[in-house]
Amino acid sequence: MKASRVPRLVAMTSIGAGDSSGHGSWPFRNIIKPVLLGRIMRDRTAQERVVRESGVPEWVIVRPAELTDGVKNMNLREFTSFDGIEEPGAISRLSGAAYLAGKVSNKSHDNGAVLISD
Image 1: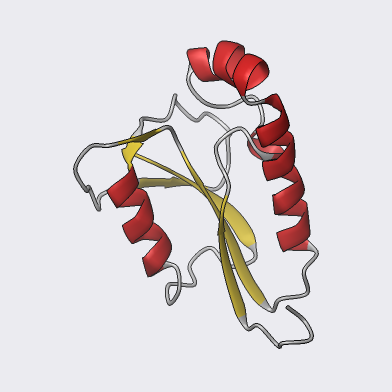
Image 2: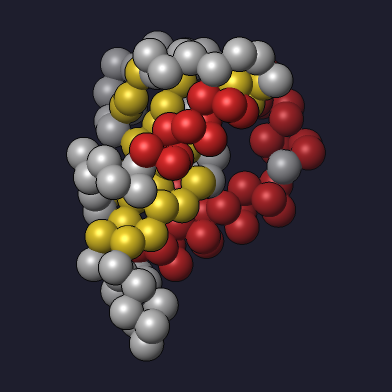
């Protein structure tokens, strides 16, 4: 990316990756992540490290809460800190995709991570 002078990177990982580890719904934290997603979550955490260390001038990591096949909702909640956070709600894949597309030009969380939730 440095050699190609990539100016901006928008990456999606997941709640539970990086410094959001330990967050998510009770079933996700206690059953799904440790039993089914161990390796995947380690890979997502490594992905976040690669993004942070990429040297790309502008980057953002988007961590959606649980994804569903529901309808698009553009009134998503955004969290950059986990202090006092309530359990995040699931979001539709359509909502997540629209949010990611918007981050191509919306620089409100540059050089950081944001959790999105209904």
